[in-house]
Amino acid sequence: MNANHFLADWRALSAASRVLVINGFTFNLGFYMLLPYLADHLQRNLGLSPWHVGIVIGLRVLSQQGLFLVGGTLGDYLGYKKLILLGCLVRVAGFGLLGFAANFPLLLLGAFLTGFAGALFTPSSNAYLAHEAPDQIRRDRIFAMQNWTSESGMFLGPLLGIMLVAIDFMWVGFGAALLFFSLFLIQWRFLPELADQEKRNRSEGAFWQHWLDMLQNTAFIKFIACACAFHLFFHQLYLALPNEVETRELDSSVITWVFMTSSILGICFQLPISRLVSRTIGSAKAMGSGLVLMGSSYLLFLPNTTILPGANFILYAAVFSVGSMLVLPLLGSYVPKFCSTSELGSYYGMYSCVGGLAAFIGNVLIGMLLSWSSLPRELIWIGFAMVGLIAGYRLYSHVKNIA
Image (cartoon, rainbow, N blue to C red; front, side, top):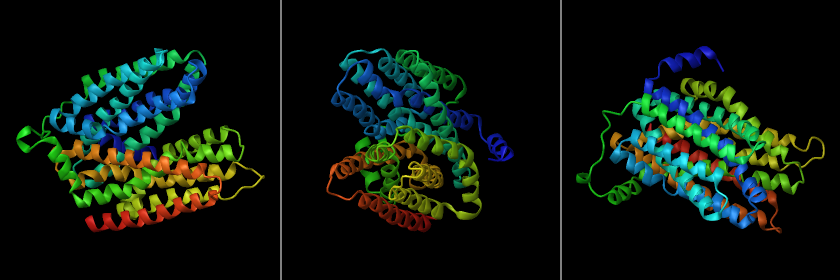
């Protein structure tokens, strides 16, 4: 990564954009210092059954993905800064409960609050960031910088978390809660109120009518339908990847190396790749080829050799990461193409909500296929590649026609 390019891009950001870009780092730092170790804490330290652990983890996902649309709509009506601040405080409570609670009902409440917090601040944060960059080129660059800081937080979070876990999980929860409280104070002080935000009001119709209007926006629905492939592929890092590693009886450190490889590549190459996209490749080709690469990366699960048995997983991480770097920032930056500035929160909420639903349904189906012992696993990996090819081509064609 060229430091001069980064500094030039950083200086071009508004004060609000800088706070929001840094948010990407802090959100993921706090999230990934706790969530990777939560299941182990619940089972090993608190003695919960795998079924109870699954309910806690599942509620966290459902309360976030399922309520993104609610959080985004509230941001359009009440103001983006208010929802970002409220989300930070709710996550303080959620992480605090997950760190200190020792009974199942309080753990469920902590899981719900942790997920609901993300539903509150994520759509409003994206909408605020998009509002700061009305033209597509600047918006692509800002979302790329946010993705870069997010990758940095994803890389450092587990390292910080494992140091605190060595002391006591309580300190992980306390540390994550303290981090989000600090983030609340920083944003309350330094994130300006978006004075020119065109807030929606009741005279424009009921919120549910607005949701129906979004569903009737054919261009937008086609866009997020293609983008669902990204969410399907990404969540296989937590399902298909661990399952394949376990099936081959490899050490779980292979999974750690996959995440480390992906994070390091993201930190080193996200901004250069985004700059290359804006100069030569173009958004349509980048988004389409990104999905093709992500889907095709699962073909690297086909070889099964005894020599360097984990090598193909590292190569998988590299191909997957390049695909993700091509498509992810552009997906986020392209949502404003389909709506007015007063609807940004709702549209980001709908985008995230549908993506989360697709990931949930995809995980259920893939989980069933992985459990089907008579089904050759090679067909699943070939199927991912086919989905990537079809979704990538459809997304390329759709974005090209919009442009």
